[in-house]
Image (cartoon, rainbow, N blue to C red):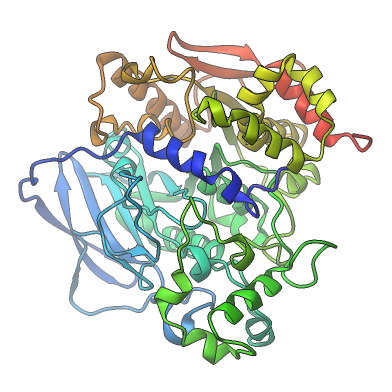
Length: 518
């Protein structure tokens, strides 16, 4: 299987380039006019937000205590109540991450360990409206809920409450060490970022009614690492009661993460990776207190999507408690929450790889898959097609199909899609939709990006965001459900939206990956 998270540095440069180019960057904008203030009370106290064109907005709301000091590498603790009225008109800091010059989709906010905040966009006068909770991507090392492309106003104007949030990233969010495993025996370990996601969802359940939302009509949705997180939320027993529907956008699903302790032959455990990091940080034989005293900058290191520091950074961990395996493995066993599911990927996820590198990336993918090249060539028909399509198919497209098929076999309602619309400004350069290029369409935020959208681009954004909101409202995005017999998906191209059969190569690739005699 393709070990995306443990060897993500092998595809990370392309993911990063694709994300940056696909989103096309934030536009410079004139400072907005002052907004009308508005107040609301949640369990922790009163909040002062603002109103903009019929949408109430609350930013930087803490959903947990700052995970600093003794709370570093501990499950998130409930936010404390405050007195008076807390200002909620500005985003909180992003979680610790490195700012990189090649990604102009990131925010310009400061970074901090004190970052567990969320943002809410809610229609004026809303009562028991459907809720959409977004989990951002970024390879578990970058990103935030405050990126301009994730502005929830356009969706909120369609009649839903939108929530975005930050969760711990890098070694702050995913870290294991024997000294940490030995303390607080009842605590889950290592996957603190996933614990933050659950805490944000618990805050939504407790407070969203005061903000006009229905806590019993929550749809979680996410893309890339966020999509993978949605799939894991469907598999974590303690998360299942926190949402009623799910959307997985380009979330993979066959990732092979390290075990918490003794790992498989030839693979380092997450604890061993943590020890290797501690030794490099001159914290040999470190106890928990010594680890928690390490400066944040040292923990951050040089992590970003172009440098995953694989030997000393584990990423998400199979801890045996929250995470028990890959999403595809969990869905195969039928352990996922049986909720309405919308799942898919983009048409050319890694097609932005430069031509002279395509063969190298295809070769690495074949090696990671452990599949015979002759059988893959038989599926793709030519070396050129294999080089062009296999990396994206293996990483994102086939796993999305695998999740859809397994969920359908479990009896839950499933809708599949392939997003292939290319902005008119990019059609000379892109043959299909690369990774992350769907984000401005799902949020209807093309105006937040650098390249001015055309009328056709805006029309597609309206249609795609309408589908996401329709799913949140009704559990149906507006096209036929997945059916094992026909195996069709909504296919979006530059010519529009229509149902079409899943390509044979995707089905054949999945069958080969699942074959015990491969």
